[in-house]
Figure 1 (cartoon, rainbow, N blue to C red):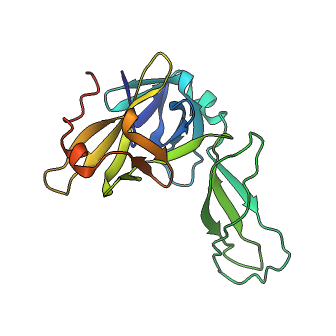
Figure 2 (cartoon, helix red, strand yellow):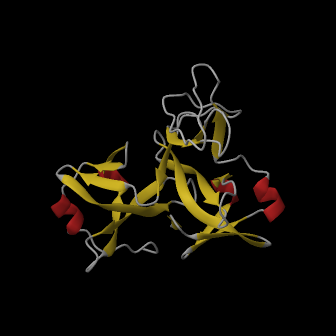
Length: 217
């Protein structure tokens, strides 16, 4: 089995390219299609990395491409400048803009992040930064909530997948409080949906009774 740990360091064949920030899933096939790799330095663009380019090892993700090839992959975010119509502007004003559809060359099925960035000076329209998600697919970010039928149980830490077809076999969950935390592997059969976090069809007690995660098992 292969573990895709959110937050893991990602390296190309000639150097480190960033960290894993999001996982893109095909909900119908219950398979991972891409990882989003974000460079460590601030303001650099993340990239959508197809799973065919990925080799995952314990605590690390290696890509079958060079750093130059990595930066030519599809961007993981899209920026849309909001039109001037009806916009009053403002000096140093940061506008949060939501409710606009995503745009882009690849077709996008994800939700807008709601992050608006205003200009530092002058009457300039804000922009919308949204996550690029292939049409019909969905994303899971690190530390999104995992909900049982009777309430939240913990945060997503990653996925265990079959290397043959990239299908998810288990969701890795960080369960518990600051003291006594442990990582458990939840069988994908217990996942009811991936919608505003991961929603399970089992109870907190059933999760707590699961053994600690053993990705090699």
